Length: 323
Image 1 (cartoon, rainbow, N blue to C red):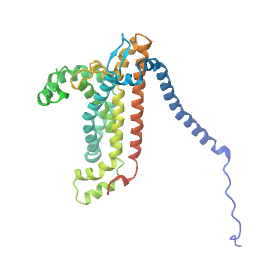
Image 2 (cartoon, rainbow, N blue to C red):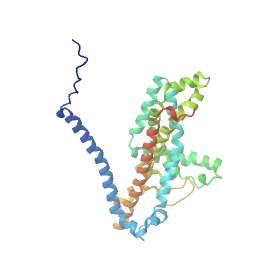
Image 3 (cartoon, one colour):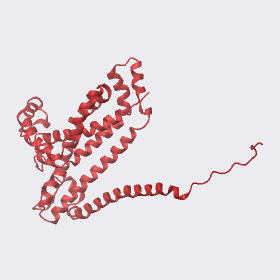
């Protein structure tokens, strides 16, 4: 007997209680995600509450643009600290970025599996070393080397540039940037490796099939595809450099001045907060340090937001590569 004329039965709805675990799990994850935003909002609100008297006393524009930090006279200018933070971070990127990208390309494109396992271990180990250890190493090892060898050589060869003028004292922007470069190298390298591993093998094979050399294949197919992800890795490394405290405090020299020479001592936002907060000599001084923390928080959040956008762009398809 044929059943072709029988009406189809609608699918039975799943019991409501069958979705309860999924809904509960989704609710827990939502609460945890919102909790992170709540914590960030509380941090911002507290910093604004504590730092408001200093901003009202000095003015936001004057606080950011003034270069005088005189606690006894209640004069607070954050410009030397902003300058020191940006200079040391820029030096760190200049030193760490070529090494990190070159190391990531070597491990993903050229190194055999045995070499990858050997080189990957010290990279992971560098990421786990506490910052105070980096600071001690920089103070007792790096600073003497810079003072006796590196800075005199730079002054002799590139002394016509303002960046390499002045007495070679070891402590200063160059020492802080070099320590930061070692600290952010694992971050940039690890993320760059993950990004390069997402490049389709067909792009490499197509370039090699057209007669390209290994380097040409990397340059015309791999790097364009991974460019946005590499920029994202760089931004994350920059965010780490901007917020580093102890290692920079120990080698930067802690001088609230603005100088063009990398040999000169300076100061950074995290360093001045760490050095002066425990000995703040009044409510206005404490408020000024909290305002510095708010400024550093704003810069770090902005950079992390940009970095996340760029990392997401790196996950798009091969349409990014120019034809």
